[in-house]
Length: 215
Length: 257
Image 1: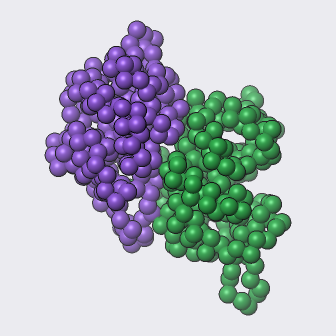
Image 2: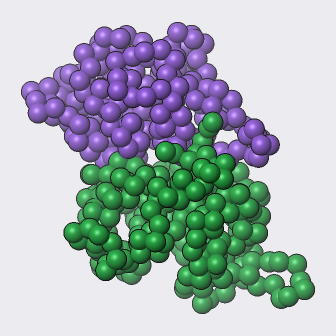
Image 3: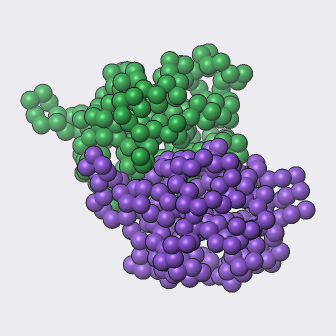
């Protein structure tokens, strides 16, 4: 039996992530929602979701003493970061007046800004909420059977600016082009919510549960 | 290309059953929320909104079970409204699998509730629902106020001031219903929608009055809404979501195929 651990550090709705993974998991795979260091360490694959604000997210990680556990998982096994679970992998976020993050990768998380305009000069709302197109920067096993520029569901006010362009695996345009998915070795992380992105999202999660962690 | 305008069917729920369209839709059990959600998902709905129309505390557990059942099978964003009165209600719905909760009356009686809920769970899951009615007399400048109790009770609160305050308090989105148009099939109040949409930084969902495909498109083109919500035109099988999308696309509106 393989175990897929969804890390529960008390931040928001994990029901959808868990249910969507259960929906696509193979017969020999079990999905667990856990805040236990031991269970995450023992899992075969790890999903790191997240919601809410960066400061609360980092505080919750430390409150549950999960910092090292998360970093270990990101070093060693197929690892999927979602939304805030992608943002906190970099060095720092502008949110909450500046928040130090896990610094697993170089990069910063920045605010979209109050006055972005679209091509018709109409003001773009923040949060960036709804279905937007994800352009695949490079091929990756997790893009398997997903058309380039497929739409995924986004909801966020901050975006990732990576200092290492080879990290980018997907990008999106909202007022500006920004990195919406990153991947390196056994890690894949995205800003949008595959668990809420209908067929494309379920395909991505299917690809993840089948992934051996090799890019 | 970029962000798509969202089409959101709204389902009224009474005691765990969808109460509109019972005789009109061709599915085995028209009142079953999961069956309804599945069908709308297949037709291309961008989100689903479930509104608990009884909103009594007895009904709360039924609603929680319904949300759990829907969220276990349909993987698009799910908003739940009706009777959300305190932080505990928000938590229950989110834990059950809702992505957003709609707060209406409770925000009017206690605006700080919106702030608390947004701080605790994030703005992304807090939708403030606003029931607006025009109160200006002919000849005066147009003015809208918030009404409660299905449009019967006047609050004296100006809609534009209220939505700015809710934006500032951390709401992630405004669900704007024109009580003048609701149920009339005359189209959204696009003037109201545009004024609200242009005065705040968060997205606005237009609601109330849709009778035709053109009404849906006008909500975006004239009302500058970020999303359009409708109930009866979908329940009674007048239009499919795919038809709405094709129509809007033909008018140059970006939609999710």
